[in-house]
Structures are given as C-alpha cells and as structure tokens.
Image (tube, rainbow, N blue to C red; front, side, top):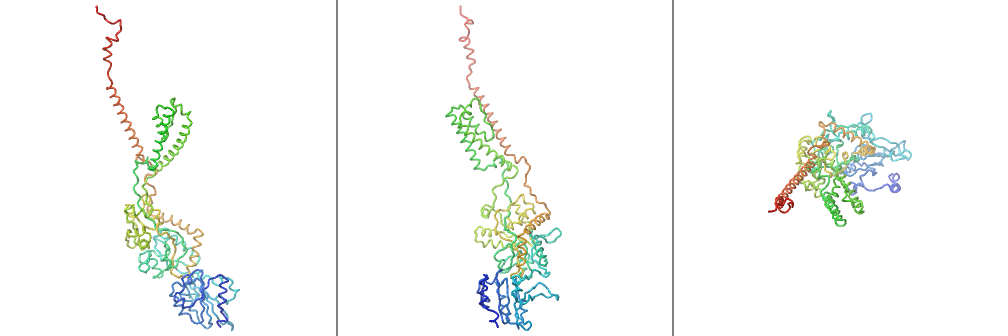
Length: 595
C-alpha cells in the first residue's frame, strides 16, 4: 500500500525540478541532532513527516529539539484507520507557522486523500479551538498554489487578548500620559496590527522583578523572564537585538536603530575676556602675525633699497594697517606707488587676503560673542578614559550593557566596564539623583541614546550637558515572543508593512512630541547669554582699549620727560651773547673811545 501511494524517487525529482532544497533523513538523525540548525529551522523550510504508525512518541521526543521549527509542516498519514486528531494538539506541531495534515480516508467506499489544516486560536460554535479544519479532497485543481495548500492560520486570532511584557517608562516607545494610561509608539503600532488580525492586548506597567531583562546565570530576568516563565506573550519595549535574545526568543523585523550613549556635563566656558582672540586658533594667529611682519617688512625694505624711500617704517605700518581696514593714502612723498608695477601687484594680492581674513574674523567674532566658547569636548570612549575623572554610571535595572562591557574584546570598552558604577534603585527607575550628579560634573550617565535626549529636557539640562558623538552597542530594536511562536511571522509581516510605509516614523514623531508636552517643567533650550551682549562678552575689547590707552599715556609721559630733559641739558648761550654784545657785536657808532 505504501509503495503504491508514495514514490520517494518521484518526490526527490520533483523537488529538484522546483529548485526546492530537500533533505531525506530519519527519526534517529532528527532526535540526536545530527543536522545543522539551518536544515531543520527556517522560514523557507518545508518538512514532510511520513508515518504509518502512531508518531506521538516520536513527536514528543522531537519536541525536546529546540531548533526544530520548520515554517511549513506536512503530516502525511498513510494509515486510514489511525486516529491522529490528537497530533494537532501537540506543541511541536503547532509551533510551525503553516501546518498541512494529509490523511487517507474511506469516502464512498473508495480510498481518498484529504487535506486539513489547523486554526488553534479560533473557536467553533461550542467554544472549542478549531484544531482540525478540512480543506477538501486532494486534487491539483483544488490546490493550484502554495497559498491554497498552506492557508494562513493566524489571519484571525479569534479575539485573543495578548498579555504584554513591558515597562511603561521608555519614551517615546512606552510611557504614561497625564491620565496615567500607558501609551506609546509601540502600542499604537500593535493596535493597528491587532485590528487587522483580531486581537487585543494588555500592557504591563513594570516587570514583576523590576528588572529590564538580562541573562543571569543561565536564567532570564525582567521582561524576558515574564514571557519565558510567567506566561506573557510578547515584549514590546525598546529592546535591542543581540545574539542571546535571538537565540532564546522569536523576534520580529527591527523597527528602529538605537545605541547607548554618554551624557556629560559641559566643561566651563573659556574666559570671556579672550573673546577677541577666539575667532582664530593659535596656529592661525601665528600665521597672520608672521605673514604680516614678513610682507610689510619686506615691502618697506625693498622700497628703501631700490627706490630710496626715506621713511620705510611708515610704509611698514601702512601695509600692516590693511588688517584693520586702514586705507593707504598716497602722499606727495609716495608718488612712486602709482608708477611701480610690482608694488601694485604685491599690494593688490595683499589687500585681497586682508579682505578674506577680516571677513572671516568678523563673522566668527559674531558667533563667539553670542555663544560661549567651550574647551574641546570629549566625544570618544578613549578620550573619556584618558581625559576625564568623572565616574561612568548606569542605573542597575538589569540591562545587558554592564556585563557586555566587562566581557568586551575591545580594550577601551573593557576598561570602561571596570570603571562603571551601577547606581542602585528601588522599585522604579529614578533618574533624579543621577541627573543631579551629572549636572554637578561628577557622573557620566550611560543610557539609550533616545532616552538620554528625553532626560536632558526633562531635567532642564540641555544648556549644561551634552551627549557624546560615539555610541556603544548600536543595534536594532525589535519585539520578542516566546521561541517557536507560530504567529511570529504574521506579526512580523504586518510590522514590516508599517515600517516600509512610514507609519512607524510618523508614530515615533507624534509620541516624541507628546512625551515632551507631558513634562511638568519646560526645558531651558537657551544657552546662557544667547541674543544679549553684556559687558562680559566685550571684556576683551575694553581691556584692549585700556591697554592701548595705558601704552599711549606711558608714551606721552616718556616723550614729555625726554623733551624736558633735552631742554635743560642744552647749553644756555643767552648770557654770552649779552657779554659779547658790548664788545664784539656792538655797533661802531655806539663804541665809546677814550680821549
């Protein structure tokens, strides 16, 4: 009977023609795990189990193989007298996304092949699950396509209420509104999917053990522990995808990219009295001074040597004065300026350079006067470890990051893990104490990049803190379900559509704005001094003015003293002139001659 109905060679040839991978094996090889994981698990794998005797024992043993999860499963019963309805209740059968049950039945005294499927979440009129639903007798015309042979089993969840494992303190993905309801981007997306597949959900405010979710001594904590040990159906908080989570749970298509960032206190701004120097760097100032002295000095010397200019110092000051936009007026003494060709080219190029330098300085000076000038900021982990005495910290709420840092092969991350301080908390994540210490400049907070942006606004620290450019453990956020959940693929397909059509981005933007509106305090987004120039911003100009006036006063005093000393040191010839006038310079008619 078996040989007449099923021809193995024909099945193999058909698989080759359709370019579908095929693996012929036996129950011993499957139970002992002789096959690589990708041979027995995958979204494009179809497994055909042929049996004549009751396979319950074999399927029970196969259930212990955690890697066994073909997306398409065909149970082919060759014994028409075998009652196999109970097989469809077994978890190892129901873990596949698509299930087809082929059974030989006597119909009208003829042996026929019938096709069945299973809808475990839908109920019949008696309120029982539709575990065995007939598709009809087998024929090529009745089943012309793969979709007709494998209908979706979870288009309708039958009004199932999903119990979510979540932590409603994760703006904008999940958070409480002003009425105390848990809302967020992920819940809105799940509601759209639920309307399509006929299910509802109940979010969880906080995990039962007040942990986020990490693998500790082989056991999962937090939200992952809730779906693994406490019957929850899905984790919908912002969970990055990593190896351990992908190994022990089902996951859906990533919907957002995120990493862990560093929040630091801004260093104190540079002294304001140096504002007039900040537009140019030290190197730039050095180049400007050297270039000016070289060009102005060489101009004066060349003109003095070749054209016999009497006052080369005046020429040097006139050329250098172009930096401060002083015109070079041509006096009668400098008629040569209009006659010497090389001077025209020389000074023409210099004036173009002067215009560029002056414009660059003035534009940068405007920025410097309106925004505080800060020292070089720390933006990498290496710089953080070398140039900062702040304590890197993270709230001890059960994240994978602390252990991942300690075991990281990257030396800088491993060193960061050794210095990391796990800030304790009680039943709720309280960031107030940590943010105060960040504002004081003693702590560096490590948290997800998106949440750091929210925390800066919530605690009014936009103007005094910044987020480092470098992030660690960048990854993709996903939803997680128990391993081998059969409807993971259906939720995954619906979520992909939301991502591709931009719905997830719109939901993120809407809840991002709403989460900021829920804040009790308004974030001070203005930097101190923006838009208002006070004396502190202009100290440098007044100091320079005072310095110049002091030098001028000193020069004045020196000149007066020098002039006075020269006057007194000059010989006084007035008395000699008077004496000589009576003898030498006296007119002849006034000379008195003796008798």
